[in-house]
Image 1: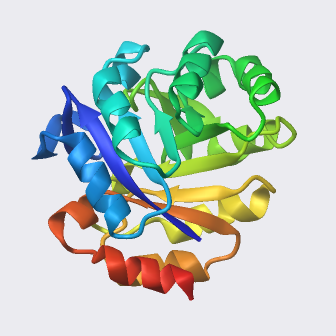
Image 2: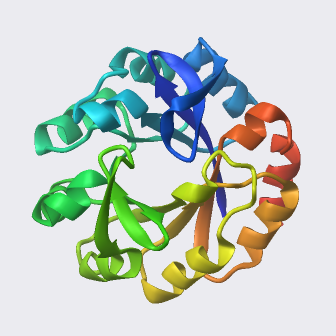
Length: 239
């Protein structure tokens, strides 16, 4: 299982939101590239980046910060937020992003996801962000009636590299991940599932590690707050 430290970008800063609320952002640093280097020096093999402003704007907003991170580290980076057309996908891949994450368009334009996965094999993931099992879009601001398992089923044969599943009500709340829902999704699809939202302790990491079918875990606030020791987490996942 891979641990993806999260660097969420808002107005050029490293932040964490509480349950996806842009008005409840805690700033953890004003040098995203330095934060990225710190994670890599600790042994991380991937980084997870989100352009939060971009998710609301529907276009890249924190490009300068993302490019600084790409220049600062030599590990693969996955990026989501404001990526809603082929041109933007191609732009980020050309700049060195290893994997783009499509969220809103997976609901609003699933044919684009299929096209992108075909054009860029292994480089397109889908972010399924949900409240009570139903997908939310546009920076989690709009809720839909589409269930996570239904959307995953529709994408089963699309050729996407991974699904990043976030339980919005757990995100940034330090209350533990929704292991049961994440494992249920992993059982329902052959697409690798990455867990996100609520990871707050080494015990949470171990619970996800021991669940069936979960290939990765994203952690943000717990790493910044010191509730989760990065070295211990990496060691636990290496077992």
